[in-house]
Length: 232
Image (cartoon, rainbow, N blue to C red; front, top):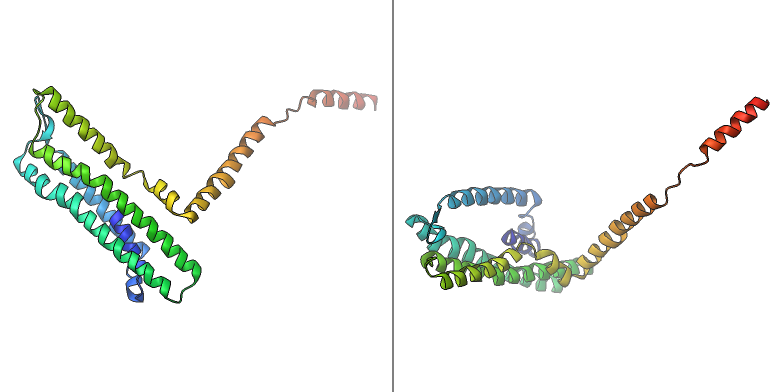
């Protein structure tokens, strides 16, 4: 999805009109759906190749899948390929934005393109820094598994993998914080939603609950009405 975002940013900031019209919302949805289906099927097939061994734990036991993970999956499919695509198209999008500044376009359009490109560029940098260490360690761990008969080495290896996996997972939750740091427009939108909409609704809801008025004088009113009717 990060690669799709960078590619879309490159085409949307291109100075050629025909290239800007290539990436549409409909096409993006198709690519996202196809990629999610591929990721789910690939994850199920690859996950079924793991085996639990008494001394090694949960490891890849099939030699074919070991070679596939070593030479294609970690170094290329989730390593070099997305990093190369994201880095290349982010640089091209940056050059497009620099060219937009020289073109006769509205100031608002130029500012928006610069902010979005900066957000995408920082997202790519975070993606590269958080993904490469875990993928590198996984290649090493698959080819050189540590036996549980060596408890100290096994514990150190599991600790290193847990730390690198934590950084790898941060890659999926850091987009909001990166965007709010590097985009003033995004900060204003977040402030508008949280302060002026969510907070006001929550405040109104709490005040409406605490300030309810109970009609305690209804029985007295009914009694006074009954007495007036008897007098009449």
